[in-house]
Image 1 (cartoon, rainbow, N blue to C red):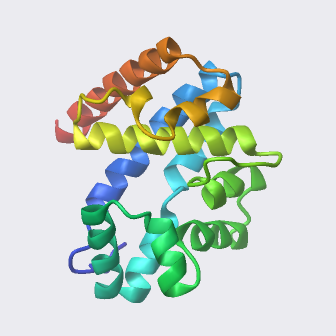
Image 2: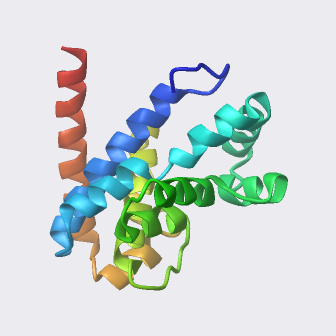
Length: 185
């Protein structure tokens, strides 16, 4: 956003969204889904965070920082405090803009561990991609990405094995390095 919200790291969100988009697009290709839909859903999955930051300002920044510090679920905390979460706001906004349901549904459900419905595969892809983006941004090597809580349960419906996920992670890391070089050059 053009308007600055003190403490809200728009650049970090932009990097996360870009990484998620690249990861989602690459994973979609691996599992036989549309790269474009997955990329777009990954890029837009956290748009509701911008809306909350602009609307709630310091209160939302404090919520984000507290969840990051304690490990609490941001979506659940938002729902408790505001009555809705960034997933719902983002999906509603995209719906209003006329974005196709194939993109809106993964935005709405990207934090669900057991999604259902027509867009289930894109929801799983977006969720995994967002988790990988977080993992890469934290630059942790251990535990391995596939050993993180919730990852295996998201891999199973997509019929992914550890080797496929490791190869996907490698591709995304390579693309992320290329983007960093292009952006900083």
